[in-house]
Image 1 (cartoon, helix red, strand yellow):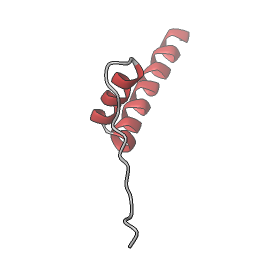
Image 2 (cartoon, helix red, strand yellow):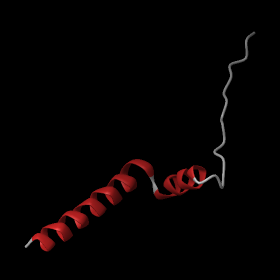
Image 3 (tube, one colour):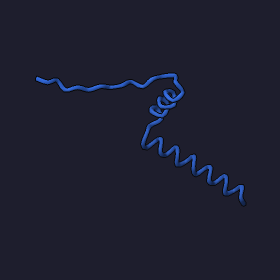
Image 4 (cartoon, one colour):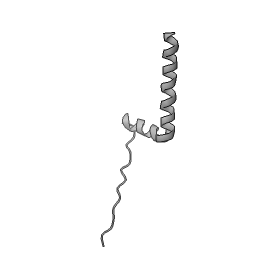
Length: 53
């Protein structure tokens, strides 16, 4: 019985995590964030400006 609860909880956690990534982050952004975390690639810094006239 405990094993069944453990498996169901793990499956629920994986499902909710995948749903969160799909709806809020997107898989490509998650991949970039992981590469930046491990130091393989730096994210671009986008700087905007307003010209003063």
